[in-house]
Amino acid sequence: MQSRAAIADGQGNFTIETIEVGEPRLDEVLVEIKAAGICHTDHASLNWKRPLVMGHEGAGVVRAVGPLVRHVKTGDAVVLNWAIPCRTCPQCLRGDEVLCEESKPAYVMERSAGHARPSGTTWNGQPVDRSFNIGTLSQFTLVRAAAVTPMPADVPFTSACIVGCGVMTGFGSAVNIAKVQPGSNLAVIGCGGVGLNIIQAARIRGVNRIIAVDLRQSALETAQRFGATHTIVADPTDKEFDALAAAVRELTDGRGADYAFEATAVPALAFAPLRLIRNGGMALQVSGINDPVTVPMPWFMWNKTYVTPLYGGCVPGRDFPRIFDHYRAGDLKLDELITRTYALDQLGDAIDDMLTGRNAKGVIVFS
Image 1 (cartoon, one colour):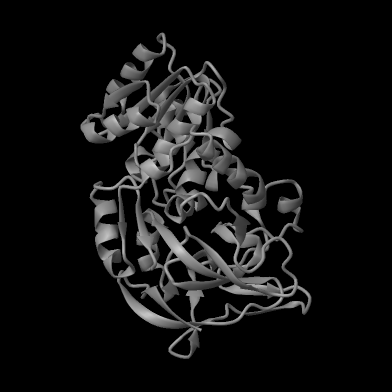
Image 2: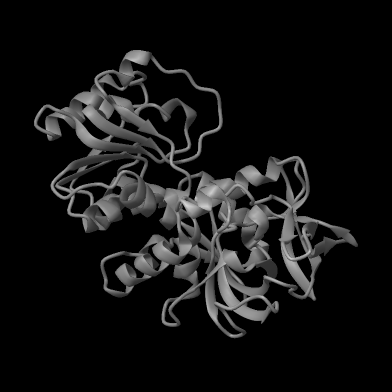
């Protein structure tokens, strides 16, 4: 079937095009996307050296399923995940589905036939990749069954779609990876979509002091609404983070935070959490920085742990229902994360608003 979609050209640009999406085979699911979140990875995908259907946060309705699909059916509301597990490789079997060794960027594996076929998505008659094998900035997408998780019917698609990456990354990094403890102290550098969900998870877990750090006072005010107990306006001239570390120690009885998270995607801040934690504390860089950076090795001293978690350690069948339960109980804010919604033709505006910090989260809505 035909579908309007955002196509990145691999050279920094995108256009809205008409693509063809095939019918589901074997363990595939055809999803009509109702809403798709926008994050910094979507902007990065503009330069991934090849054309692809953009988008990796999405929620929608199942329109058809292949004969091997059992856990969803036509008409079900679903949320998509971009780290698609095979559930048979050693990583999946040990519970680390996010590290699946069989996920491939451009192909859907026909395990029963023992070979891979193109993704089932074509543009101008040629196969075209889907970002992270899901390509949610499209009216329709064809994905493996393991990429979809049923969602409660009473959750708005606009709120559900952001669970698929930004919410999961922040919430999961705090709950699954750091395993933040009640009564502990925690600092978050960057109060965008990911940072706010670290803050929410900390609040839900009963963290004592939740210290939000950002350059913008408006972002810190938002952080307080999501659960931050203390705020610090960062000084961009504090290159070694001496003043920031001192401010955090002052708020944590002179010791430093038990946990500190970086959620900015700014390379110069990649190792900043190490300056904010106590001896034996945990620093987490959660924004997926890929640029080369350097760090003074003494920052690691005294048994500090530094982790770069992927996707918050996501296990969709475990984590998405838990997040929706918190939302429905009123413990986790999703609706409030969304600053603005856009039509697909306004994707350029959505990306610009994200890059300039005008949005906590922008969402594309398909009519």
